[in-house]
Image (cartoon, rainbow, N blue to C red; front, side):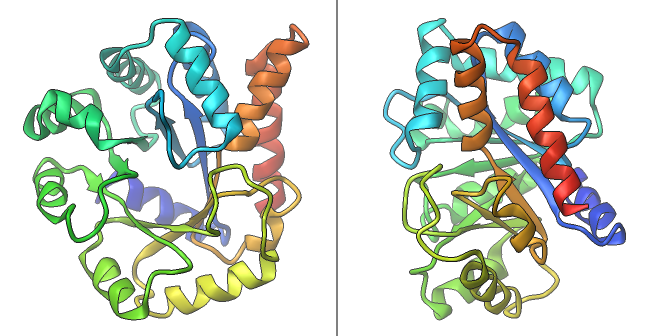
Length: 265
């Protein structure tokens, strides 16, 4: 059983959703980025790590700021792999999902990129601009190397298409809660999001489906019925605030993740 599936199995036994955290690799520098990961992994069930990108089309202002800081400090793709490798030395059983855009994979070549992911201990991949069914061939390559390719669905995905995506998915499906960039204020009520989510979940109850986009400590409790909840922009925002106030982002981000975990436990 994959580490991602193990994480969901554990949280279901504990009668709570999995908490997935998202931080940008190298924010605000390589050392601090690893320290943040090591610290928040005590409360997170799955750690998502974003590749910093100069034109992140799906990301809102908070994540763009994180990406800018990382790139300004000279972070390269190879540094993201090093980050995962070093994190896994300490937390080998904590699932890691890398999130990014296809042009970074294209630079390496599909096979080489997947091979490196497998070598450093990546458990899953989200490729924002590689939609279904165009991603089917790439997803098969991932599966051969025991890497979960995570499919995305949104409020506008038709039921027919959704059924196909969920059927072909691996260990996890990511439900984008609203039509917006990450970190946007929720445009629909949490109750409406969970209603939509449960309809999606009914398509195939055996699949792990997580909710992401616009989730904060104020809305997370209302989404407790989900298999998993992703929080990213709130953490990137806290890193920005900590740096502005000349405080330690490791301490402050960990406090937020601990609070989020308490709200859903």
